Image (cartoon, rainbow, N blue to C red; front, side, top):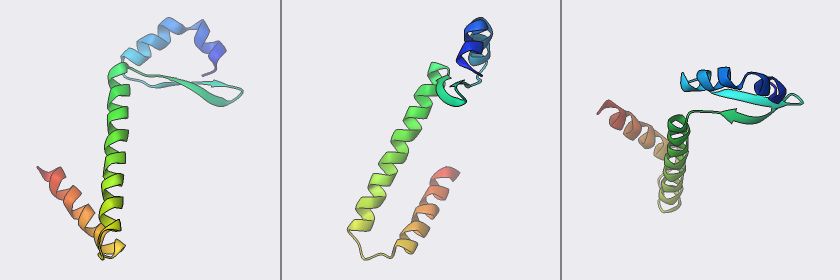
Length: 86
């Protein structure tokens, strides 16, 4: 949806966002903004932080061991699967 279209129907967009939809606004065919509920935005930021933390830990482990990267990846998948089952 273009920015101009959004200006014309802001109350409708707010309703859609309240219902859980993420609305992307475009200008000249390029995304320039997203309308998103605050709770969804908070969750998105939390997931990004957790992924970065996991990536940092992975880098530290791989940098401090002779464990082949392939085996480290395998162990990481097994750990994530184990955590997901709990």
